[in-house]
Length: 175
Ligand code: SF4
Image (tube, rainbow, N blue to C red; front, side, top):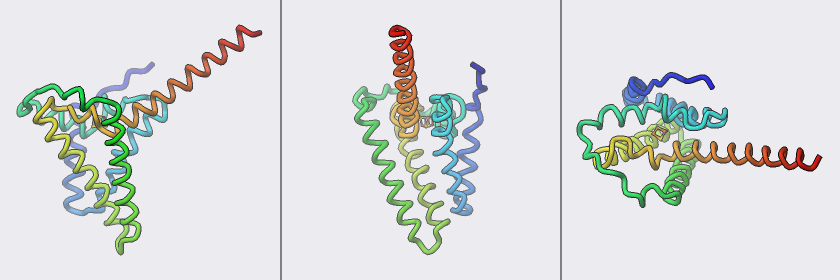
């Protein structure tokens, strides 16, 4: 398979640009949809968690700026369990859906949606930074709903592939 180049050394610039543009005009907050959609797009194309390892601006920013100030503690095992990741994924999905629902009924839909996306992006970044200072810089990535979501997509694709392989093997044996 072709090896994709990593952009993690510089992709933090995209996150800073996103923040600055959104502060200037909250409608730029809609760009956050790109950040939310890209990992899902890659995962659906069968590229697994490539977004996390090669492109993610948030992961890049956490890795770049927290290295010197992080206490470098290991994230407790209790944080990494499937239930915690599922709860975070559901919580973020529900909160985001509610904010988009309210935005659709707001007088200025575009601004309200931009604000909703920006708030989601910032809350995950702030939590990620706090975790990155207390624990290792990219500890957020171990519980991140986007990372977990893409891992779930990959797992379901792998399950389908192995079920298909078993079916073909069974068919060959029978014929
Ligand atoms: S786990 Fe989340 S924050 Fe970390 S690299 Fe992946 S998408 Fe980005």
